Image (cartoon, rainbow, N blue to C red; front, side, top):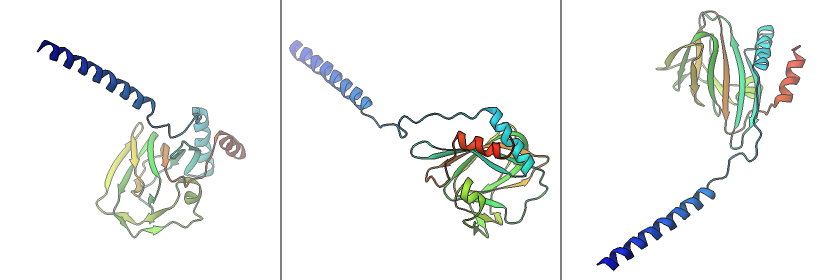
Length: 205
């Protein structure tokens, strides 16, 4: 009986050792990074402030700062500034077929309506600025059925999945937010730091 116990113990120790080695091998041969030796990118606060000044001076609401290839997806960073809004404009519910948007509110605030059941949805034309340079193909709609309303203020985050309608229905004074776009189909043109600086130089920054 003692020999059997010692033999069993030895087998268990050997099995644990082999399994441990196999697990280590699995860890070493796991998935490769989806973006191999890709450089990080850095957007200083001063550059974001420059884009806010451009927004104020030009009246452009949405300004792309970066559009970076990170392997299986592209990621965009934008600065959005909106002035006062007493009521939504007609056909102003936006939705983007392929791009998810994440808002981080820097200052101000506003009421945002979101939802997937769109009313009187119309496809945006291909020459639309947002389609070409910001968030790819999408739609404008007259409204949202059974939507959810969010009161956004500084420090809040709102995640809007691709295909979900969204609309500011009221802005008391202004809202300025940083937007991160997730673009897995890579429909938005790339924009690096050099391209960003060229854009700012063109606009006198």
